[in-house]
Image (cartoon, rainbow, N blue to C red; front, side, top):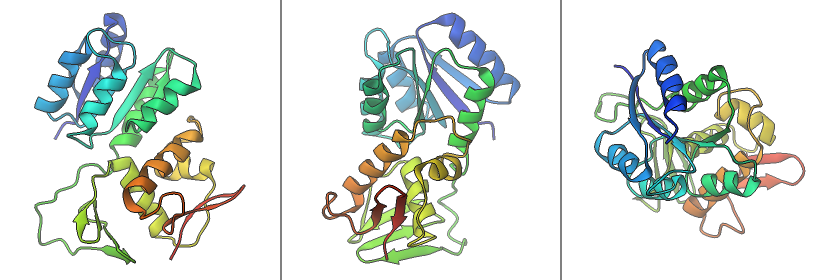
Length: 230
């Protein structure tokens, strides 16, 4: 089945270039030129991935991201012409999985899209699949169903957060640098800012730790990186 990408961007020449290249790669493309309509499509058309500009009419990209995250864990890549680090971090804090700064190459954008779509096509209805579950303390990580339970209750988690948690949990007490996690979890060589990892770790801790300021699952080795504590 073709993957469906929603582009929310108000500059038509940029949309046309992205759309042309994504269609060549076999993607179905939806497009919106303002934030409000983009949000409507995001919630009604169930895209597999969203490319979301920050500066949009009617509703900015940050607000669109926040509202999408209230309903969906779809991968979101923020598109921004801004260089300010605070904007990049804010997008990640609101639940974006990745960001790319304009001007960008189509090759890099396509690589980011493929990386963020990887392993997101999960068939949760197949009860015949043998479930692979990692349990630690009050946490249960179902590898097959991309599901995390804390004290028996489902945790609202994005695909990228799950990928990071799974990667660390499958190799407990092994320390990984942020650069290494960008390559292994985000799925591309060092294009991104390592703060992408830090923000995702912070969001994840807020969801799975009893005390995010004193974590017992996603641990930090100061000056080295992160690891999963047993």
